[in-house]
Length: 104
Image (cartoon, rainbow, N blue to C red; front, top):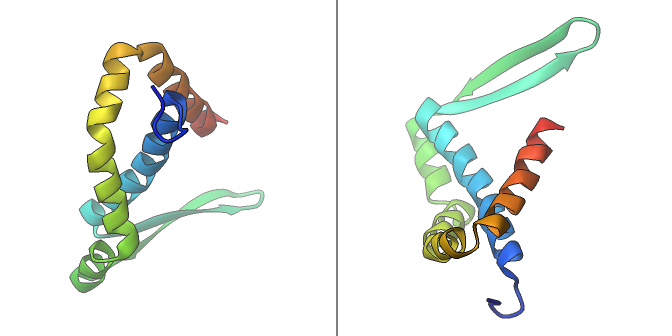
């Protein structure tokens, strides 16, 4: 199946890419702030947490980017479900590319 020239692999790739944004937003919302890891040469890493006010979280959730991410994910989910059921090898191939990216 192709959707306006996009292959199933490309559709899954866009879904997984967007899913990373959604996961990041969800962590920020859940923790009410952001973590950042900084490397200190010859010493290791330090984690820094920046707390966000409820107003800042609300503002983030009202941003166009957040809304686009949520809308796109919602619209792609049924398509991804079909691909996962009918062509699991394609879904797994793209998912593994993302897993390998994280491991590198």
